[in-house]
Image (cartoon, rainbow, N blue to C red):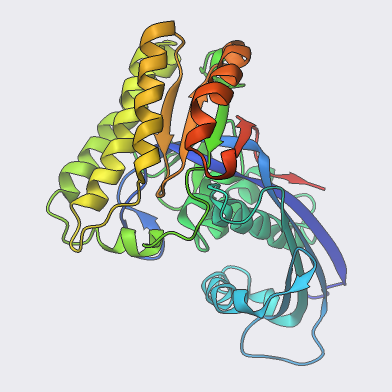
Length: 349
């Protein structure tokens, strides 16, 4: 990359929701257990990078960052760490001045993992700068590199580059699985899962009292950590088997158990903490009662927070919309929810 022209790259990347949860890491953003996730469709971050040759050499990466059109220096410390991590893999960045402009399609603190979509979009744009100098190279290499670099910003971002379902973390049953990057998963998935719906019920839009970074750290020395990592490996294979067989009953059991286990690990950490709120539990109980009464195969999952993701097949959307409006919104802050569905990953704009 001798001659670096000026230019622009713009990418859009979605968030994702893990079905088998990643909780616990080692080294530089490497997972202690594999995870499986649905890629979302409409909950996206759009990031444009304008770049030009730097006027002078700097020890790191020269950049400005704008979010929703406003300069945000408060993001600089995290971005500086990210650039320090990726410089060994993109050393040409030291020779550029970058202006990064980012925006989300969803509100801040809305229950969507914005770090996943943000770092996925940023990594995709950075890789595109590099890729433009090697137009005839293997596309699969760049797909892996996007996921690899995104992981160095946020572990779950590794799963946001492709879709509809992603596997991140080594697993002996799945060829090509890696701790370094996520791979597309589910070429045998039945059609029912390709447009699965996800309604995010916004129980609490405030800042979490315990960050995910701290939560991952508390898995070190956790009395149940090794059993949890073994469970996740078992559940990864079990969930894949259930989905390929279109066994929605088994799918529901594994997904809900994974969500509750994630929060059980938090509640049994040292120090222990609780991210669920009373309305989180109310929503879960109402979902269970509705499923038992109607036999509609909807289920919940939870991220590392209080909000509830309601998952269900698209064919039941009309009935579930009524259910959400009449029975669930009363437990949501400002009666708000976000409706999304399974998508296909990042795209260049």
